[in-house]
Structure formats: C-alpha cells, structure tokens
Amino acid sequence: MSDNIIVTIARQYGSGGHAVGKLVADNFGMAYHDKSLIEKSAQKLGVSEEMLQSADEKATPSFLYSIATGNYDVYPLSINFAPYEMPINDKLFNLQADIIREEAENSSCVIVGRCADYILNGRPKLVKVFIYADMDSRVKRVSEHHGISEQDARVLIYKTDKKRANYYNYYTSLKWGKSDNYNLMLDTSKIGVEGAAKIIGEYIKILQNQ
Image (cartoon, rainbow, N blue to C red; front, top):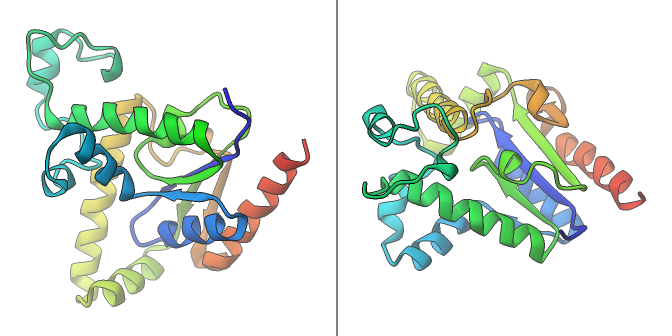
C-alpha cells in the first residue's frame, strides 16, 4: 500500500463540497476525482457516460434483487451474483471502487463522494471529510447556481441529500453524515469554502510531517 495522502470529501448538496475539494487539490498539486470517475467507468464498461450518469450515486433500485441473491444484509462487493445479472448501479459501484483504489495507489489525490472514505478506509494517510452548511446558505447557493427559485432549490436539496444518504448507507452499512465516519466535519456556512480548504490543508501538512 502506497503512502499517498488521500482526501475524501462527502458533502451535503449545496454546501460547496466540490469547490472545497478542488481548492485543496489545487493548493497541494493533487489529482482531483469527481465526475471523471464516470468517464473512466464508462470506458471500462463500454457504455455511454449518459447511461452511467443516471445510475451515479444511486443504490440498487429494487430490494428484491438483494432478496433474490440471498444477500440482503451484506456488503454488495461480497455478493456472488451468478446466475443473476448485476444491476448497472452495482456494476458502477464495484468498478468505481476499483478505480478509486487504483487512483489512491497512483498518487496523492482528492476524491469527492462515491463512498471513497469507506472504500479506502484503513489507509495510513487518509483524510475523511464531511462538508455541510445551514439550509439558508445551501438554498442560496443552489438557487444561484441553477437559476431556480428558492422553493425549487429546497426541493432539489432534499431529494439530492436523500439520494446520497441512501447510496452511502446501502453500500457501506454505515450512516451518511455521522461524525464517527469522518476525521473532519466542516460547516462552510460559518467558515466558507476557503476556510474549509485551509483547515483541511493544515491537517494534510501534519500528515506530511509524520
């Protein structure tokens, strides 16, 4: 296992998690992985990116699949799927998990979402971060970014957070956003994107000196 420093960022929708991750990556000259994982997964699966986008960060849509395989209470990576066809969601998760491990071995990097904190857990220099913010700040950010009303922004935030929580909880058997799962939990509505990136940077510097 390499000694690379890996920063994983889980985030509430509208909290600025992407911006925080990109700033950290730029400040330390690290690779940055987010939607790029979809492109790499599509190439390996031989399917369109559009198909995978619809399955990205979504749990298997039907609980009946898990019942059919007899593995409804175990981590999906351990499931013996034959003779059943693995749902595209699970194919994407398994492939992205492999890509995430490869990228972590190749170089120090920042990885946003996709249960990377869980997939890479146990690495010696892993920084697991959860970015959150108060609802008013998130609504303002989402409304301005998408050019939608504040009411529509609230609905989008609720749906997206629910999707991310379901995805994380399903594939890890842990609870999304629970402090026990992370090294740092940062409120960007209090310290801003730059403040969050600075705190993560100080954590990285400590690891670099160990």
